[in-house]
Image (cartoon, rainbow, N blue to C red; front, side, top):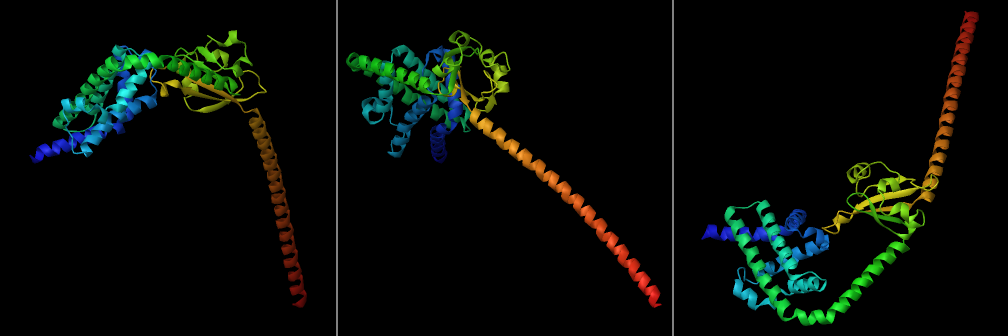
Length: 335
């Protein structure tokens, strides 16, 4: 009985510690989604995936705290409002965005498999991992039943009322995104996995001809090193800033490359942002010149002081010699 209790505690430790493995969870879910053929179609962001993980684990933590660590499948189905509301609302949201039922359930299956992958990676006994896997599958199976029931009984009426509203909001978000990009004074380029520019904001098109930008390799557009995305990222790593003058030697830009994949699981695209820092560069060059001139003046002044010190030492040495000679003459006369 004592060992069994220990296994129970350990299996709960595994379950509730899964949120600490978020990077591995995201990596495994991406792999599972790709294996199932869903990854290229998903619009899920990193934050959405982590939210799904938190929502899935929250009822387990709640039931444990309530003294109901193993509620059982029938109880979960009967009391959906007490634990599954967040997941059901999320499923509705995705269905309203056009995700088909089979794709959503397929993605949910890959989600469960990725959680099992996380459990396999974590340290623990075989028995505790078996219990943890059973717990994950229990809640996963219950949610599948609740998803299907909600979609067949409630969602059709909701869909008819909210489809137009969802499309309106989607169009509004798209316009907002485009307006933000076009209103920015920064040059923004979006490139695909092959390094070709697929989107550019108005600031870029004010500098370059659209025909020279869209579809062209970004290393040609910016006149930078590399002939592939891999080469480009070796010279200009993601998140690192550098200065360059790709269009005019007199205009200096600070360039930074960011991976859109860090936001959206399915994306292999990159966003390149160029900020005009000509004024700062000119000011820095001016300050560097002033510092250089001041340093040179101090160096010359130091040399002059050293020469004066040498002259002074020579004079003092000459005075000492004359004094000794005078003393010698005086002593000789006294004698």
